[in-house]
Length: 382
Length: 157
Image (cartoon, rainbow over all chains, first blue to last red):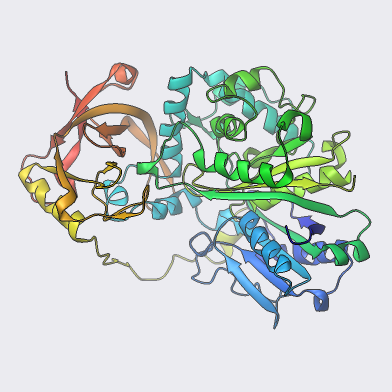
């Protein structure tokens, strides 16, 4: 890599189901918060990138009225219609190109505006699947879940343990939307069944939320920050449309992770990573994510969760923040994973803080059944 | 504070019903028209043999172009590779509405095809779906050359 890029500031909202705050106020708070932490003013921002979605926001320019709250007024500015974790990749490349020194990435969605699952039908092939009318992101996830669970004999209990772990972890995270201290397996398995086996508590909630990070060149990062977190590796990959995919595995994520590991020179995930923050929109999906990230063999996600290795006191904690199951403001969710990983590395994760976190993985995704994936390896000052 | 948005400005959306006129392409048009003759068409990639149903004009696997010469007819029989029982459905206005009777959705790999299609699964009780292996297409009584000609799939021997 030509030079290094660091995260020197971050902020996230208190994600919730129906935020009284307007979208503009929500975005202003995280943009201003991340800039203040980085010790910069609006004048220092060389470029600003927003991640939001027109359909989810109900306007054909989802960043309408957000340019000023983001500090992007009359500055270099663009938008990415995917997760903020992809916008961060774009910001990183702008910095590495040598044309910009400091980038602000802002991602936001207020899911309470309109049910994002209804919107998900607009992600389907309009000339076939949309006309057939049986699919949406949840029913498609249910089909994938059943395929995966039947093939590898993964039980509903094993899937429910993922919810138990993440929603339990979220109990200590003040930014999480769905915090459930003392949650039980029975509660998860008795929650409303939508599309078998997907239940209310094995899918992510519809959340309002925003997140921002400030990226900087190595030179600027050393000038401005005592505690920069470096992007040591990144990889992204795009899988094909659901009809032409191997739904038993997240092949796109596997490819993305391989690229990130190669760049960060990671050979043994358990020995070299201290934790992972992943964007599991469904509990079963986290098990498939373990496999794609190489935390276990294919089909062994259920065995891994049974071993408790991914619990917060396990060998490789996954989602100590609560993950996407605890808050899912779509487009912000992946960038929130980055921020949660950065907080852990900097020792700023409060009640969720784990001891000795030097290097962490963060994952973002966009699309039906995790079609597009991006993986970061983040590291502190050693 | 909850529901403040709906209470303050109950915006119903624009008075527009956008009927988008997508070009389905030559092969998809043929696929839809041939449903009248109870034929299911697919395209087989000349380079890698991956077979797409409904037919596609390009093979993303090997970046090759396909055309009418690559069309192939499928039997309408296949294997049920996945399923879900739907207890709810979206009403088009953003609400999940409970179904009085659950509906099954099947993931079907048609014989001779590599892609998977997702269709209503008929004449099966949810508790029996796990035992279903082979399925066949259920045509509506009068086929008209429309996607609605396929009512769904049902178990076959």
